[in-house]
Image: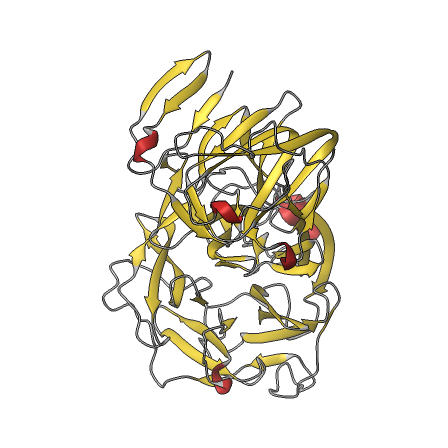
Length: 507
C-alpha cells in the first residue's frame, strides 16, 4: 500500500522506503488548524493535504479550442506578443504588442493593440481611430508613440475598493533603461501616465537585467495591496521577482521568488513570462501559467524552418507552458514539473518564443474557463489560441479503480454545508468522513454515514444519512477524509445551500 503524508512546517519528518514508495509520518499534534472560512480551496498543491493513501495529485491537460485571433493586420504581425486578457463584466478584452518586424526592444515600431469579445470565444478588432499606425488611423491600437512603454504594456482591471473611476484600469510598461511607467484609463481604451516618473527602476535592485519581459501587477484582496511580478536574470537564469505597493506608485524592495516541489526545491528553469494572477474563483490563490524557455534546444532543421516562413533568428530554441501557484510571499509551489500546455503538432509550434500564455484565466461558460496562448511567433501565421478547462480544473486529487483516501489537515470553516467539485466514473464514487483533529470519526459523519457522491458536477453539496447540515461543527477544527475510487476531486468549499450548489448523493 502506498502512503504519502504532506507535512506542515512544524511537522517532524521521518522517512523510509517501502517497496519503492516513500512513507513519511508527521506529528499530528504539531499541525495547527487552518482557518479556511467559506473560501474555495483547490487541490493544486498540498496546502490542505495531510495524508494521501493511493491518491495522487494530477495535473490536467487543457483542451485545444483552436485559433481565436489572428495577428494579420499590417500594424500587428509576426512579433505580436505579451498578451493580457481581462474579463470586465459583459466584455472580454485582450491587449497585445503589435510589431510587424524584429527589432530593438522598446522601438517606435511597437504599439499596443486591442480586441474585444462578448463570450471570450469570438473576438473583434474595433477601429478606434486613436493613432495613425502603418499609414492609417483605421486600426485597433490603444497606445502608440509611447516607446519604450509599448514594448510590454500590461494592463489590469483594478479591483481595489474605492478606486477612482478615472483609474479603473492600470498598466505597467517599460524596459530596464526606462524603468516601468504606470498608466491609467477609465475605460481600458484611452490611456495616460499616472505620474511623470517611472514607478519602478533598476536602482536598488541587485540583478544584472530586468523588465524586458511582461511586467504584471494586480490588486490582491487577500493581501490588501498591489503586487507586481517581473523577470530578472540571476546567475544566467531567467527568474521572477515580486514587489508590492499600497498606491501603485511607491513599491517595496523586490524579492526573488523561490520554487517549492514536494517538500523540497524545484529545479531552476528559464521562465520567460510568469503570468501570475489571482484565480477568479479563489482570489487568495495566485495561479501562474508561465512560459518555460529552453534556450538552444533546437528542433527544426533549416529546411523545416524555411517551409513555415519563420524568421531565421527564431528557431534555435523551444518553449511551452508550465503551471505554478502561490499563496503570497516569496514562494511558488511548483508541484508539477511536467508541461501544462505542450507544443502542438507541426513545426510552427517548435520555434523560439512561441507557446507563451496570455495573462489571466477567465470564465467562458457555466462550467468552463479558458487560457489563451500566443503561437506561431515570428511567422506569418502568428495568432492567439484558446485552451479550455473545467472550472477549478487545473489539477485534482485522483484515486484509481482500487480506491484510496485523502485526509486533510485540521481546518476551521464557516457555513453549514460542504460543496465539492468532483467527477467519477459510472463505477466510481466519493464518501466524506468528518474527523476530530486526532483522526477519530465524528458521530453522524462517519464514512458509513456518508452518502456516496457519484457524478460530475462543479458544486455538489455533500450529505450524510441525517442530511447535509454542518452548522454544529462550524468554527471547530475538523479533518476531512475523502474515501474515493475511480474519482477526481478538484475543489471544496463551505457555505450555505442557498449559494447555488446542488445537494446530491445516491441512496
